[in-house]
Image (cartoon, rainbow, N blue to C red):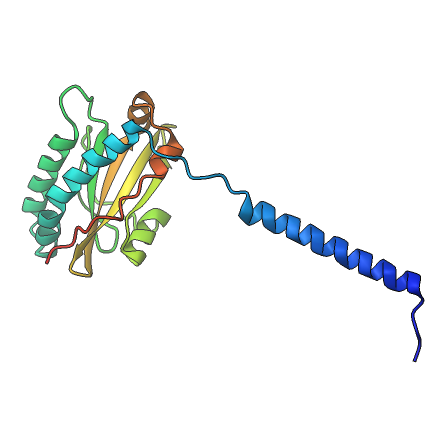
Amino acid sequence: MRNESPPKTALRIISLIQALTLLAFILVLAFGCRPDKPSPNPSALLLKTRIQANLDLFIPELTENLAKKRRKKVKTILDNFYARMNGPGDGSPFFLAILDKHGVTVTRRTQTSLSGSQNYGNYQVVLNVLQKKRTFTSSLYLQGGGKVYIICVPLLDSVKLTGVIIIGIDSEFLRQAGITESQFMSLDFNNQAYSTP
């Protein structure tokens, strides 16, 4: 059996220590030095309260009527929801859409009239809601170059998914309210129960 000379063994140990030190440094950078999530400012918290109050008010009725396929009733409820979200003088910064359990548009309410159904089931944010039955927020770029922020909320009848409601918010409205993208994305809408009994 051959014995290694002390210098070769020492070089291997030093190389191993250097590799372990580098690995530890990378792990600290990757996991230990993450910036804290920004705290929502008062404007962001006020927006969350406004949205949450309307979700609490309209979701049970929307869920029930969507499950029973009462499209006219769903549209009427959505119109009322839209009117409450877009108060006078706001310039209608909010838009709403109801999707079925596959991600296809049932009805929508926007400032401009849109026609036809669209399938949003392949959009990652909608797919997350359909699969995980949780609320997700995201941002979307429009074809004209604008940006909107969305909140996608599952409509749950007990645990059964009946559809999704999307609340869209104009980016200019958030900017004027002093709400940054990171503050908006930090808002958590999953701590409320919307399901109907």
